[in-house]
Amino acid sequence: MVVVAILAAGKGTRMKSTLPKVLHSLGGRSLIERVLNSVEPMQPSRRMIIVGYQSEEVKVAMQSIPNLEFVEQTKQLGTGHAIQQLLPHLEGYNGDLLVLNGDVPLLRQQTLENLLKTHREHKNAATILTANLPEPKGYGRVFCNGDNIVQQIVEDKDCTAAQKQNRCINAGIYCFRWQDLAKVLPHLEANNAQKEYYLTDAVTQVAPVMAVDVEDYQEILGINDRLQLAGAYEILQRRIKESWMAAGVTIIDPNSVTIDETVELQPDVIIEPQTHLRGHTVIKTGCRIGPGSLIENSEIGENTTIRFSVITDSSVESSVIIGPYAHLRGHAQVSAGCRIGNFVELKNTTLGSNTKVAHLSYLGDTTTGTKVNIGAGTITANYDGFKKHPTIIGDRTGTGSNSVLVAPITLGNDVYIAAGSTVAQDIPDDCLVVARERPVMKPGWVTKKRESQSK
Ligand code: UD1
Ligand code: CA
Image (tube, rainbow, N blue to C red; front, side, top):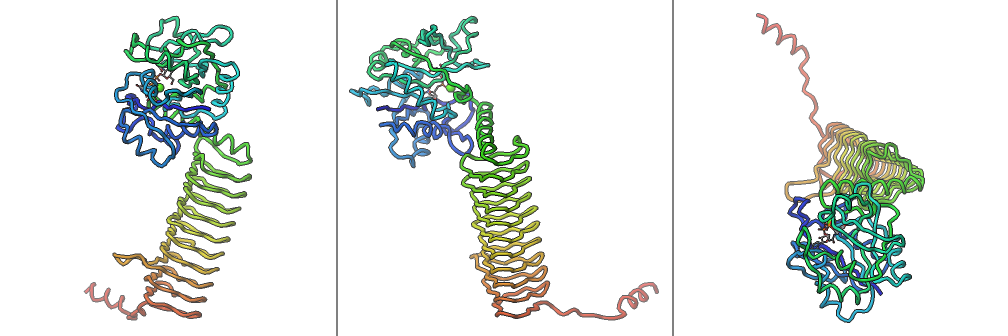
């Protein structure tokens, strides 16, 4: 049995933000959500979040996550003081307590499982996660004997010059036998540079305490300022892109590409430079995405090509060619074999298969049949200033250049709209529609005009 406690009461002064530190977003998820995710497989019996600074905001942000317990630390007197707040809640509890810092978001589940395993196998009173950092500045230094038994933890601000040379740091992740910790917690003192009650002091007051070294130090990097937040994003992105490349995705110039963890890619997808894939996006095999595209919460079928375009909340079937400079949004649905060209916007629009919207069009709230050809500059006038109205276009229908379709309107199958027409009524099947002025022609008018002016 394990109870998890997450330290999240601190202000995060160095973020210089009105938002509590643990609510800052890293790749679409808050720091604290990420920490919670890392303990999920352990199925903790209780998950306790220690909140203090702007606790209401933290609670509201996390209200959709079930079975969390919030414990208030009204004054933030240090990490040891934070864990003291658990005493009344865990009275009589006989198992282990896993303590995590709310600002250490890149931990792998496996690392925590190893920590707990070592803790139990060695029957330790406490087991702490350590790392060897190339730049240990700011972290507490851990001093061990040869058998990984922890003897001392000294905060950076309390270190002597010689102690600062030690690169073995405290990751801020601990496993405690609760009964042992509960005995020493009430006796902590704040005799240190920060005048705080340190949890690290409690660690060295129980025995035995063992250190488990993390394999990849990047996992335990803490976020204290915006620079570290950006650094963590870079690490996260590298992890994601490396794993997709290992799974058969080509990423040309990975440094210019970002991919959310929630994205799914199939083998033989090619991601061109300057492309960003976000949210619940799925891209199927054979697609070539980019350069210069943003796809968010959208599904893209096999062998589709998308260049310099933006697609959000939409779905595209197989063998579609999109772009350059197209914008699909608001549940656009594009069937197989369509072609969407430059400066085309589709909003809440469904295109039947093999339809072409090749240039300069806006289709909003429109449904087309198959093999429709939307001429350059065709616009649906779907908004009357109060409401949006639908446009329905039948199979094999074509609109001439610069047509305006005033919705609500239905064009039947095999309709031809002449270029430059404004159509505001339903059109039956198999019809040619010419809705424009006939030209007024005055032969000889120009010559006469010139003659009259030269007199
Ligand atoms: C802490 C450790 C340090 C370790 C580092 C790892 C102590 C004394 N030091 O230092 O050894 O190397 O983490 O990242 O524990 N918090 C509260 N209440 C408080 C104070 C802090 O809940 O009164 C929370 C913060 O919100 C944060 C976490 O505890 O999530 C760590 O606090 P922080 O001030 O960042 O500690 P560090 O100085 O980084
Ligand atoms: Ca910290």
